[in-house]
Length: 197
Image (cartoon, rainbow, N blue to C red):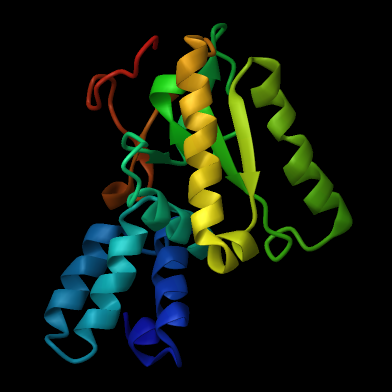
């Protein structure tokens, strides 16, 4: 909390808190406790950062995308980083954003976090296991989320509408994570099942 409060910008403060929650350095509930214990000094910055950490995003770009998608009048609630398994129970690549009723994954492809050529290729190639089981996969970049948010939102909404119109859903089971408990999977039945799940 001290590092986030002392960060030179609000964006860096948010990144510190999202990173702390993602790396399990601290539980989100503990971070909230210490934000409240600090009182009013810098509280807006800390509470904004905690709100992003509580989305379950694993990066600042993912949290920005979640905020953007939350403004949609078309999309249902989306999940951050759920666990996916195919019909045989085999674990699949974790999508950054998941729309359960149509089995649609939105992947944030960032060269910053996958700087080496092998890491970048691996990131992009991992989407193929989702496509192989007929998950709708849509890729976006952090730059597009920041520079062209309306375009990104329209692109995700269009893909969603088309997936709904198809009437088909990939045979996968998604289990959401609880960001307040450092991303532990929620117990079965804690979230209503998506259509066709």
